[in-house]
Amino acid sequence: MNTGERIHQKLTAFFQPEHLELINESHMHAGPATESHFKVVLVSALFANLGRIQRHQQVYRLLQDEMQATGQGTVHALALHLYTPQEWELATVPQSPLCAGKNT
Image 1 (cartoon, rainbow, N blue to C red):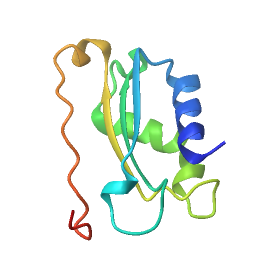
Image 2: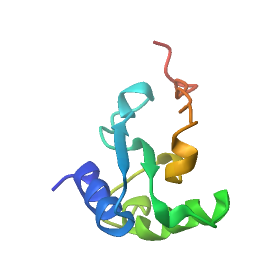
Image 3: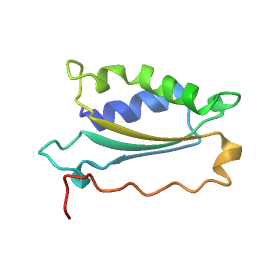
């Protein structure tokens, strides 16, 4: 199982999302890594009554192995867009920029 599959599996099992997009954006960044930069769009009722920082903390705790160089993966960047179902109805997910080291 690759890093992206592990992340998707963990997010699905824990958050039981109404909507989940896991986008590998590694090609938009400089360097040879193929699974190092991800964008997550996650809609879950579990985010109700949680602030933005608390939501991010939950995801980072869940994916700590993938975020550590000594863990199962070497995720360098994780863009998180986390919504409740009500917020998702009005949400516009921003585009990710190219890495400063990537010219094209």
